[in-house]
Length: 387
Image 1 (cartoon, rainbow, N blue to C red):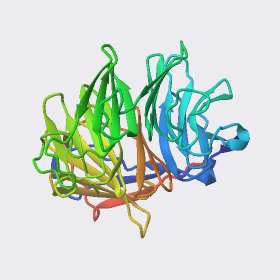
Image 2 (cartoon, rainbow, N blue to C red):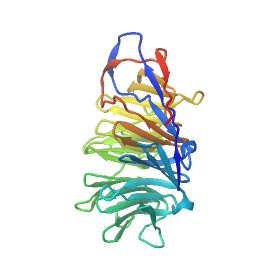
Image 3 (cartoon, one colour):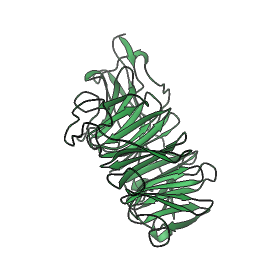
């Protein structure tokens, strides 16, 4: 285990307009800081992030990290420190016990509690496969989404339940993502769309693209946009879904599909999704972050990094009409985005080249009247602070 005091550069972009024009616009994050191996992360390839009060847990390609927000200290654990496997692909925290559950890409499932790692894998437990893409805590149970089905572990009784094509409506068993909220567990599955598990009844429900076309979405808004799903997020009775061929939203009756060609999505290739509420969701793609900030008006903010200057670029659009462009000295660390996590008004973004922390000072949900900012009317203020 190692610790580092990170010296972080906080660069703030204050954008202003020379005119008094205002419009109903969403909040745009312009105050970003980055964390990399220079700040104590064990690796810059960040697969997952989980906020637990004052702690931020980070899963990387070569170890686990924890950022203590009050002090700025970065702690890390690798195999030499007892971590059972080097690649950490998913993290969740039990809100009742504080136990940290860790999905390991090729190494099974681990629990970190009291400074000790406990380890479950195919040879010593009911874990169906050691390649764990997703993990979530559901009451006294822990779910692991693996490449060969899903496993549910009861931490009180020690009982394991395995779900595959034999006892669940899985046409394919490659489970990519899992989430739990409000009595429902959702699984995003490569080739089987989305599965819903009702905890109270233990009944399954499947969501597939009903038009049966793999290459295109033949009839829009008729169901999940594609059966190759990569992420699920259930919040405020809304299901947000990411896939390799677009994204979607489901309110229990109606589907809405999202594509790069008609929205602020930077790409249809989604790695993950995180819903903030019924109207806002962040999609992590291979070409940046696409945020639907107001569902009713189809207003988006697209966050990318300029590969030449490494500046942050935020584009506000409605449908495909650009309303505003804002540059900031820093934005997301890299355009290959893998994870999004909310932290109150702040947002954490995991990428292939580091972890980004967007500070949400003055954040507001939805839209409000404010000045329209343009790249040609901006002033960059350098506010470096060493902690």
